[in-house]
Image 1 (cartoon, rainbow, N blue to C red):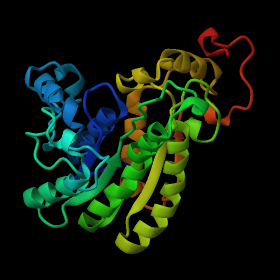
Image 2 (cartoon, rainbow, N blue to C red):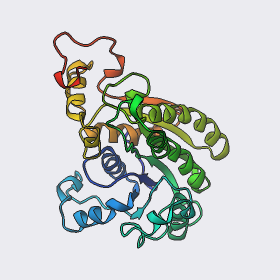
Image 3 (cartoon, rainbow, N blue to C red):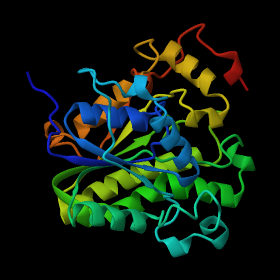
Length: 304
């Protein structure tokens, strides 16, 4: 037996705000493999997330194979649009959903982790962050600010995370992010500049694999997951139709389960994947390999 073994390793997963998305599935897989996991949550969603945990609303999804409940080592506030607290405008810093969270920037989170765990406490860094304020708009209708916001939070934040946390990574560390097929193919309805952001994320993965590999010995990969109807993905508006289309047209005609992305990411961040870096790994039931839709498998909601 060759198990995924993450015992003794600490992971930080940025972008977990509920139990319905890939970030939570990745956290659960890593905890099952023996890691301790800290998560970072967008401040406007933080109190809701904490309340759901405290009231036991996530207990079913937190169950581990041995019957115990998944526990996060720490839950931190993070708005990855800001490298430093002073970068956030006053209306953000003074907003009621932000003002009592302390320093919610990337540098602020790094400082909190150093205070909690020391100067070099991390083995795994996971970027599960994406936001496009105009995601429902076709690219031709996206404003400059909307486009730049999508790229900032969904792609540049990976660079910001590595700059802030790179010096805190221990030898043999691993970094992973989440991308999507829209980076390389046109997906009608997935707008707002998000396709550009995912393309940038994949390109940056290759460059960062070189730079972080030479500087800190870290591996950097990204997982291209198939569409999944998480709460966050509901903002796209057509996520249900995207899921049905891919289920019908993939090499394996099955719906993707979040746990499959969790398991693949845990593998990529484990010593079993020590030779893999700079890669885009597809976890999409083989949809990426298809060059033609299966006859009769069109979805009316996606027709232009």
